[in-house]
Amino acid sequence: GGLVIDMDSGEKVAELDLPGMPHLGSGITWDYQGKTVLASPNLSSGAVSVIDMQSWQTIKTIKTEGPGFFMRSHELSPYAWVDVFFGPNKDKMHVIDKKTLEIVRTLQPAPGKTSGHVEFTKDGRYALVSIWEDEGEVVVYDAQTLEEIKRLPMSKPSGKYNVYNKTHYEEGTSH
Image 1 (cartoon, rainbow, N blue to C red):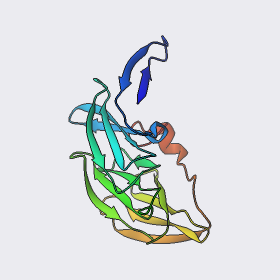
Image 2 (image 1 turned 60 degrees about the horizontal axis):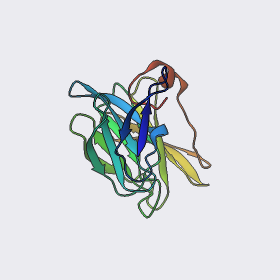
Image 3 (image 1 turned 180 degrees about the horizontal axis):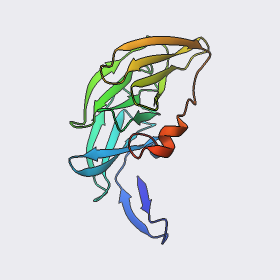
Image 4 (image 1 turned 90 degrees about the horizontal axis):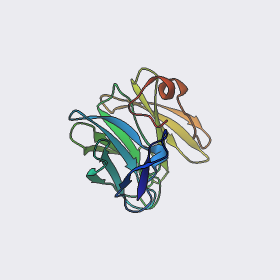
């Protein structure tokens, strides 16, 4: 579960019905059918919870191929990306349509290697996926077509946080 606390008053606003271990620190928001929703991966089960931020009710649980760690989008992208960071499908990356709340593509950038932590370029044109291995790389995808553009070799890339996106965009990035 989880709690919603009013930061001004310190009062509890709501209790969230979230099973397992939601990773709210990686949660992202966007507009869905005129409402702001919060989506969060789960560290202990294969699910993404989508919560209406007015009623604080879970409106959808999206089944994934395993527990996830990082979730990202960009306010100019129709998609939210979530990794399957733990378990036998750690090499998978789900792409969720933000209008339908359905997985529209499952990418496998490097079979057998951990795919994680998508981050977007400032303009939202590219999604950058880390292959989190000693002999890893960053895989660059076109964020609209989902086609691979190029690979940048590097050792265990992680933490490629886009400060501009975090400080200038309300949707798609955790704060």
